[in-house]
Length: 411
Ligand SMILES: [Zn+2]
View 1 (cartoon, rainbow, N blue to C red):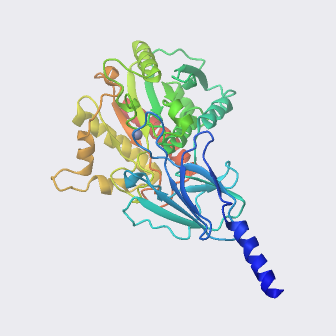
View 2 (view 1 turned 135 degrees about the vertical axis):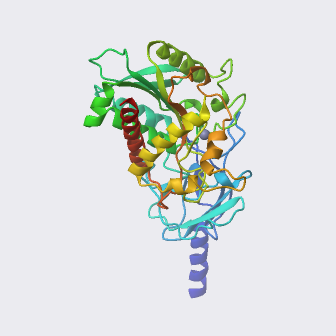
View 3 (view 1 turned 30 degrees about the vertical axis):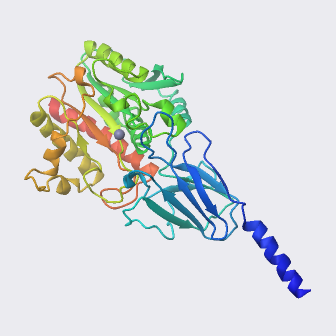
């Protein structure tokens, strides 16, 4: 009888743990494919999914349930290409709403191979996993709605995407004053759909410029700021990377004729506005590698692609960065001033990195500078993990720095 009970017990246990793990990613912004599941060792192996017309799979956002409780769950991520995209500091959620960066029990960060393993004892029945705090198209639209009552900005539609989604933009200004003689600033983001950290950064920018902070109030009587928070809305919706997509990357779509409706409309709108006001700054917000675990390496929190008279404009970017980095207490200048093997500093290398002609037609002699901001996914240059709130705060400080910088240069 005892023998029989033990057998029954084993059968029940096996039934409970075998084949019960469920995996899915077919929700908005989701990405991931189940390669295999091992119910004996309670582990899953996941790969990113290459979405239609994409060439790079760089984003993960999926859900798992059906694992036995109070047991270590192993999530192994494999990537066919480029280890930079294997997340090194991912997020989890138990409700797909509230996200956190847990201390994973084992995380082979130093493995420069194309996989990483994360082990965790989930607190609840279902666990969501993502390369970074997800920022979906719906999240953008609810952020836009949250600004309807704010009288320091207007929201409008830039255009509709190829899949007919609204591409919103903000116009931030003092509504009681006319537009004439104001500084004109354009800021755009999510040209690369998977670069989610940039969206929190842009929220911070919009939050500051539309706030009742006295610096923001004064700034709005001198400037008009246009912000397009999400250019490639369709790929964001699909959970695609968008980078190097067919037929052309959004970021490279600024040649004679633009392919995408969003880039065509952006250029048209930028040109219209530059007829009334001098374009003073144009900033394109990115965030390159979810798998880059280094703290203050070249790709974190830097600026490149500076147009026109590059050395003259570079010194302006440098002055602007000094204000921002001081506000953020970064030590990035130490990295930027490091002399690399060809005798130039890292900063000089960025200045020379002019690989495309974003905003090219608008970048005349009047512009102070046009630049790219690369918001990190993983580690702050000071070594801490980025959270959504920290990135938002960084964007807030960035906008504040723009205000301070323009006041200093206009004296
Ligand atoms: Zn990018």
